[in-house]
Length: 281
Length: 162
Image (cartoon, rainbow over all chains, first blue to last red; front, side, top):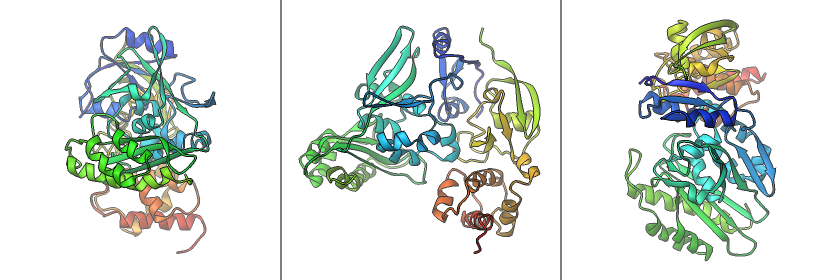
């Protein structure tokens, strides 16, 4: 339970970080380290080089611009929890943050780390997809932007290549019509959920539009429940819950069987559905 | 060339420390093995149990999920330093009075985690205390006595009575 040997470099800038990881055969980017160092300790990961980006300046800002809230990759959970900008403009993130890990983990863990690692049972990747966000990625040939729906490709597989660094995410700022919902089941507060749901919708009248229901802990990546979304947009909560049978096929894991997870998903949907459809947020 | 071994300078419990460390060494192993500060315990080594909790630049972290080399220039406080300073004497006394420990393995982490909550001031509810301590496993006490102790100190520090 000790890491295999590796070399370590502290990046002085984003360009330096990209140069360092580009020059190594098997480098990993170290941000908050709350997943990476655990996997190193268990030797699930044995990189040659760790590139520490914690002292790269400019990656820990939260900025509102052009209708988007941009959250730097090095913003830590604890910092995000205290952020008035996130509370006002990304209320779904604000709802999810208290469920992530425990205080000592929230002090170190970063938003960018969670998004880039893409644990299928983690809260923020699901919120990121539910909010239709964008990932800002720096690589050897410059910066590019990838939509959240295209970011997660499979189990721990994302649009990031081994030469890239996620520098920020952008979330569309909430408006008066934005409705969000978040719920999860975990055995212990702060643990990874057996099943969870991050949901958004827009509502100005009786039925919601742009419904996005994104479940976590039920697949290899955040899972959009598109049939349930359509049923909820038609105003039918029961049909939406029933449609989850089509949308979700959760594998068994150490926490629960697939059947239990699917049942929990329905309960979670019922909990958030009214809030998505009504005029109260 | 990228190096495996690095020279670091940091402050541990108020004293400057200069050491050469292997990059793969976690801060809790560094404190225990290189500095002999064995009050911080090693439990699960993957961030679940909280036994390794230490303070880095004033905030609690998992000692098993931070590398010693990352702490170059940092200010580290361990249970030894925080005890010697007298910062948590009342909390330690309450733990003893209320039997909030049996084997004591989790206690250093419990104390540092509880102190972070208490240092915010105010009177946290029992639910808030439980949520704040949720990342620290205790396999002896069933937690009730720990919550009692933290609650009693919160009340005492805020001038209230039980």
